[in-house]
Amino acid sequence: MGALAFENVGLTYTGSDREVRALEGLDLAVRAGESVAIIGPSGCGKSTALLAASGLLKVTRGRVLVDGDPVTGPRLKTALILQDFGLLPWKTVYHNAALGLEIRRVGAAQIHDRAMTSLARVGLADFADAFPGELSGGMRQRLAVARALALEADLLLMDEPLSALDALTREDLQGLLLDIWLQNGHTSVLVTHSIEEAVFLGRRIVVLSPRPGRVAAVVDNPGMGEREYRASAAFYEQCANLRALLAEEGALQTSALGGDAS
Image 1 (cartoon, rainbow, N blue to C red):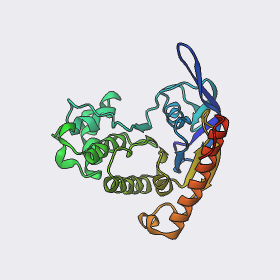
Image 2 (spheres, one colour; image 1 turned 90 degrees about the horizontal axis):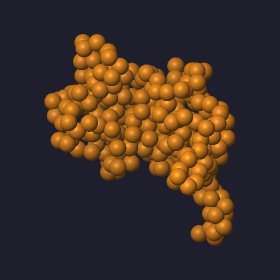
Image 3 (cartoon, rainbow, N blue to C red; image 1 turned 45 degrees about the vertical axis):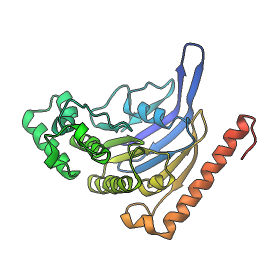
Image 4 (cartoon, rainbow, N blue to C red; image 1 turned 30 degrees about the vertical axis):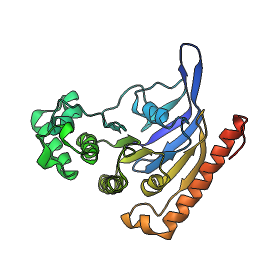
């Protein structure tokens, strides 16, 4: 399962001297097993929406649902991968992969099997006794993916997980995420600033408006699903289409601020 829905969601951050409306009137339905990418201008609430879906932030208005149930806190079958990997430097690769299972008090034998299986799937089984500081950036990101895989989640939320990596490593891990989605059939929601990444990994691409974030456009991307898509004319056309949509949103943002478009 893992179907995700935002229903008229608003979320306002309250500071010491002002309030910031991050989201307002956000309506979006992600079908079970679907892969959706979310993209938009900086500060438009992309990460906020993801944290609300994970249960780590409470919405101010509206509601977030998973499989029809309101999200009121972290959910056992939801996995979240963050930009900074979220690894514990004092724990080994194995224990980082097993962390979510240990928190859920899964049996020791099952923890071992699921953690080692997930490490093998991302090519890190031989590094089980190493520490995160001994790994490259790409390997640390693979470890973050392995930890999510070990949970056997039906909903995978990813907040710019590859943005700190070099281009070749990033493309390699994009391929890994695609392969895992095709094999597992889980629901996937990716927040990214990269147009190419959104087109490669999103069967649908959701464009958010400038803050407060709402759905400005939804782009169907039927070609997504094969590694070869990246080299096709359809891929470049889709990137150009998305770039034009984002440029329109940027112009709207500039206009709203009273500046000149440039």
